Image (cartoon, rainbow, N blue to C red; front, side, top):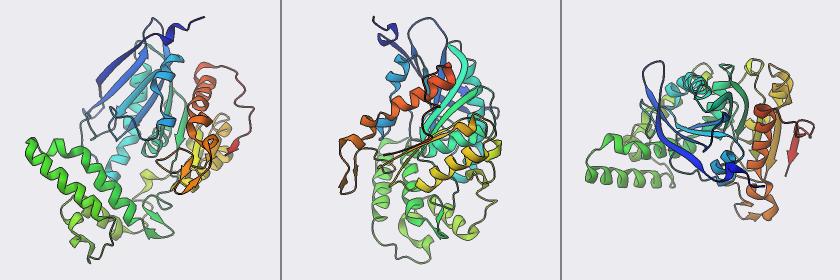
Length: 349
C-alpha cells in the first residue's frame, strides 16, 4: 500500500521568527502535503540553512517528512538570512534563549502536534544543549552529535594550550558568510572575498609573526581581537561558562542520542556528555541516553579517515544514522515502542 506521505512535500522558505528582543530569525519549513498535525524536528545552525551540510549521512529532510515529521532548519542569530550579529562568546549566551523561543514557536504552528525534537552536530549540537538547559516543556528528545562538553578540551583549549589553528581557521571561515552584509557593491565584495580566501589559506603555513596581532590575516579581520582576548583571559571558566556543560547535567531532562567519531576533535566531549547524562541526568528519560561511535572525522562521516579505509560497512549512510535518529524520535515524539530503549546503551563501530 502506497504511503501518502511519500507523494509530496510542502516547503516554505525564510519564515520569520521574532525573538523577545525584536531580532528576526529566519527558517525553512518542510512538511507533509496533507491535513494533519505532526511532531517537529528542529535544526538550528550558523552555516546557511539553504545549503546542504557536508555530512549528508546525518541529514535527510525528505526522509523525515515521509516518515511523518515537520522539519525546520533555522539560521542562527547573525548568520545568513537571520538578523543580529554573530560572535562566538556573546552569541553563545544568546543561543539558549533563541533555541527556547524557537522551540515554543515551532510547537504552536498550525501543523505541529506540539512535540519537538532537536537534531544537528558540532555547533548545532551545542545549540541543542544550550536549549535543553532552558527545559522547554515542548522538547521531548535530542540527538547532539560530534559535540564538545568542555570548551577547554578541544574547542578553545586542549591540554592547556590555546587551539590557535582551529580557532583561526574556523572564525575566519565564519566571515565568508557575512561579506554580502558588509559589501553591497558586487566588485568590492569579490575583492574582499578573494582577500579573505587568501588569508584563510595562509593559515596552512607557519605563523611566524609576533605579536600575533601583526599576523596579516589577523590584522585585516575581526578575528584577531577575538583570539587575542581568548589568549589574555587564559582558561577563565566564567568567561566560557555559556559554552560549557560542566556541573549542569542534573538540569538536563531530555533524552539524548549522542553520536561521535573516533577521529573527531570532540570525541572526548561526546563521550563525557553521554556518561554524565546516564549518571547525572535530571530525569529518568535523560538517564536513558545512548551513544554511538564510529570511525568518522568531524566533517567526514564516510568510511575513510585520512589514509585509512574501514570498508563500506563503516560508512554512516550504510550504518544508517538517519534511520537510527528517526527511531529515537519515533520513540520519544510518537510514543512508538520499537525496542530502541531496550538496546545496549553504547554501540561501537
